[in-house]
Length: 253
Image (cartoon, rainbow, N blue to C red; front, top):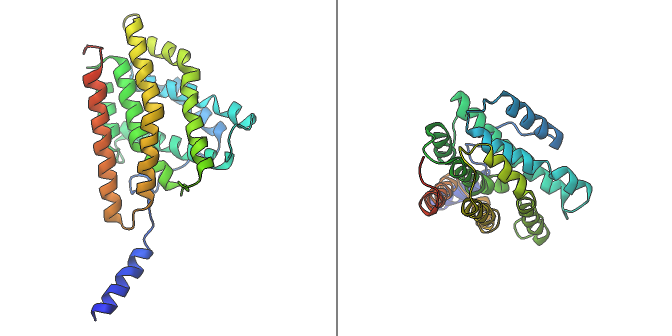
């Protein structure tokens, strides 16, 4: 009887779908790069200038504009995988934004924190931007990587993953220009240096941490283990948020 139970347990666990967190399993996914760019344009047009969520939206749009050129120049070893990841990753953000507006579906705690600060206006826009980046890189990226079935042992995919991070350094002047449009006063050289350092940090070391957490999530063998790893990801994101707020040279408004 005990042997039969163990065999049944093994069969049950082997039939579990790995790394498809419930918060993301059924969200609609973009089908093309042009669709994502059209969506960004529509959202920017519809969003009021007083809505601080628009800052991250515009920055994300600006970064995404570089992707068509990178694909055209054949900069990726695995263009199909990069496209798959990008569409999945963008869809997680769209889901968070739409759920945060309608309140008809669940938003991860990381995005709840970000949207709360957008509404409260307690922190300078630059800090609000960094909190949104934290939610998307620290929380969403491991989920998206695991959800598309990434082969984390494939070094060529890891190289493609790292290449995406370079977009931010190339687009930094434009990103700072967007941020300046949301600032009540001119950004100082100290402010710009801090923001540049934090975004660069997020796009390098933090993305690498997300790669490692994505691999860990992809190896989950049960919904319970998956939930535990997701909790770890949320906890890690909260710690990163504390670093952003505590270490920032920018005072509260």
